[in-house]
Image 1 (cartoon, rainbow, N blue to C red):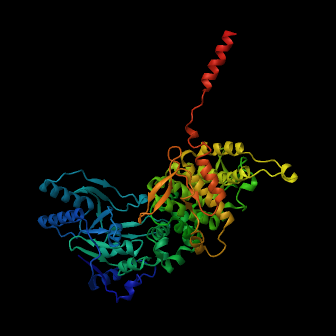
Image 2 (cartoon, rainbow, N blue to C red):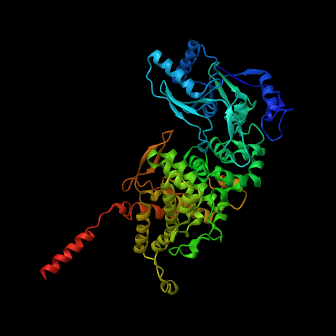
Image 3 (cartoon, rainbow, N blue to C red):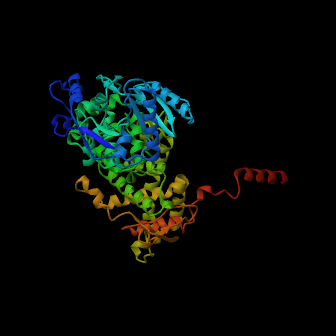
Length: 574
């Protein structure tokens, strides 16, 4: 199968604009669409390989098209085409049709399924709901085992006070131009077995690994400011470079203002949850967020001043009067190191890796770790600043993420302090007069305080130790040069699979034996750490010799009810 693209010699197409009838604001005019219709196309090498099931479904649709005598051009749009061009599998199939509604097309499909004796499921119809990015009615159905969304090609007109467009049926060219990025504006023409690149540069941008908007990026972002966060997410997911014009537009004050006023907090959360729970580099995404000076828009602080948590001494809080300022430096560096550790775990053994929820919690906790020791007062009750930012400001859809991230930040900072207490308690006793006059930390104190932390963080204590290690490393080995150096700076830090206690052999691709930390109680997933032996020794002691893992599941030898009963019986006897 072939791909068709706008003729590369058309400079205006490469720049995402056409001459003559350009409105000047980035919108495509009628003259532009006429120009698209006249443009010649050339064939290039095949770029998509269909699976057997995909080929079967598309052949079925073409057979229906012939037998019913339809004039409809059937196109798969958006992310599926992009992913297939990149050689990735995708089940996100959206079909766009040009001469009927999605529901009417779905009814034709049902008729054909009945005719061929295939199983049929009911058609679902999702009415237009702009708040959920559903701007036209969409039909949903299952075709030969594939879940498919079907709707019209469309064009959009935005108004200055809203990111919700006025939408109407459009042409394929109009539909391509209204999309966020050229790599997402590709179509797969089912009728002709061709990829269509109607912006003229979608395929070349995929090859060059660059994100570009089909039209003027400032206008694109002003129409829908959420596209700034989508640019950040796609860049991190695919490791694509952001076009210089996108970077410049994202830094504009009016884009920052539009993000505040046009986009709901829930939509922020949806985008960021995909960043921290998906593939790619979440730290790269958050680095863009900071570079664009948008971190305080997305992670907005309360209008009232933070309160200092009474349980946290001043010396254990952020060194800055404004903890949000540390997002630009230490927090990103901690997050980078946590990302490295999470990657090491996944590469080493499945038993050591973290779940999607745990990864989301870890990245949010790393980025917000400077808020440790601060609280927000809500309706006469105080709550962790981390929880408030995620739950009340970001409106994180999953309450568990906010609660768990707040606990993780608290536990990680406490572990970072406890490793120093453990080192002091484990050191040989000094006989000098000066040393003997100083109070000495005992191992019992470390045991007691570590147990308190474990009771709060429970099964996620390995995750808390990973973040604690990042806190310790960044405090002692901060990156003081350009932001791009942090990945290189911390390349020699991370997990040390040799320095563990209970271990067994696993083999790498070359068959070399490697030691992997095994469960001490249940599945602790605790490993040693590089460069900082003192912290590694504390982590291994906590996971093994302390006997504390699993303490949150211990049952008391005597319950309160049993104690009361025993006291009553004694009184009766007396």
